[in-house]
Length: 260
Ligand code: TTP
Ligand code: MG
Figure 1 (cartoon, rainbow, N blue to C red):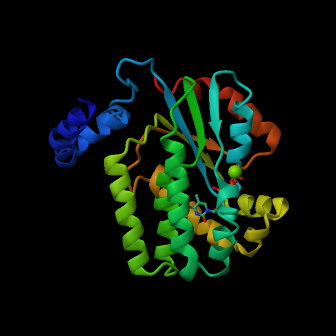
Figure 2 (cartoon, rainbow, N blue to C red; figure 1 turned 135 degrees about the horizontal axis):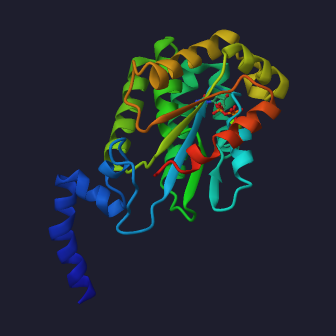
């Protein structure tokens, strides 16, 4: 009987899902409309409303520090970026390889970043609020875009990565209610980068941080490049730690009540 049911399910439902991507999305859990700017309330089949906040900003803009600050609040789940995986996947270091030879290894790194970010986005939520470092969107709209625009990613690599990305955002629900943009000057990031001294990043010149900065500004501030999937809260982030923590506290309500 179970076998018959499964056969019937495959015969009737699967072709329907293939023909109707939005139905597949409902089966995955959340409709696209419920994550858009105009429908910001996350209602998953009658569950309580939950809120997802992305922390975005240049390399070394202070995203992890911001997440660490809010991780002390109860009922918030904080997902830091899987950088350790990018530095070590089965004994290989795609991040280091990319910085050494972007044309050869850019696609390798960006494919893996895309996978690991997607894995974060689809994790079931166990608390009312989730904050996460970056998103699959900035990996594509900022980093992959930068590699391609600077002539370091071959056209065919960018095309394949883009098709993957478009498929993912069309078929898999990526919830977001608010983007917190830590806005820095490239110079500040450059100084912080030198201080923290992550081995792979020693080769990063100031111009690289300037390019990333400009792509961020075009996307989140000037709305000149790509769709912005949620409202943006801009926090000036050139300040010292004390002032930054003060600003996070000042903005606590705006950030944590993102879904209201
Ligand atoms: P960031 O995502 O900027 O993380 P961070 O920890 O350096 O930032 P913060 O100090 O604000 O917490 O970058 C991690 C490294 O990964 C950095 O060298 C840039 C690189 N990277 C890519 O090359 N491609 C990508 O798509 C992403 C998301 C990061
Ligand atoms: Mg970080």
